[in-house]
Length: 259
Image (cartoon, rainbow, N blue to C red):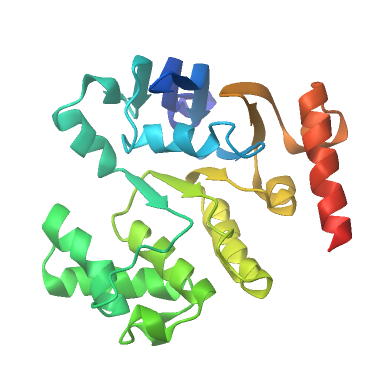
């Protein structure tokens, strides 16, 4: 009777942050962050500007170092440094506000560079993987073009495909739609919704509350470098406990109504 055993992959944490603190000089940007993320869990992180959201996810792939606390990614202690950092980065894909594509390389070349260098793939293997993910984000026909020939929404979808070409276990998104024109936001969010439906572990910093409602397993609200509140979307939006959460949601709602 093995089928009665719960699947360990769904119950174990793939990300663990324990008492994480970070300073920039005198300014403490993260204070006592404890966070545990399960395999396949989809988390949306929101909060006012300067609350530490982007710093938190940038610590998960060591783009930012922490001065106190521990971060363990899929069993690897990131805070131990050294080769652990490379091992974690190979498993964690990241998509930024700015697309960060190489302007002198074609879309296909942008997607094949890292798998060839870091995963040791041949060009043919890397191109096959790249075309698979460019098809996944619905722009295979753009493979031969250069970034400047694409719209912002298309470039961001390329950035997502490029991250996927490394077959990461975790995807981090740092305000992936904030640099886009409103009409391009939906195509990027649709791509992310597709990933979520595939069971990818995702952490996304965003102000897109519709996306949070429909995709997130858990919404985290940050303020002043702390996790103030976290709950499933229905509870988070329907019955926020903290006054700062209520204020933030009220502001977002009124700004949407203004538009």
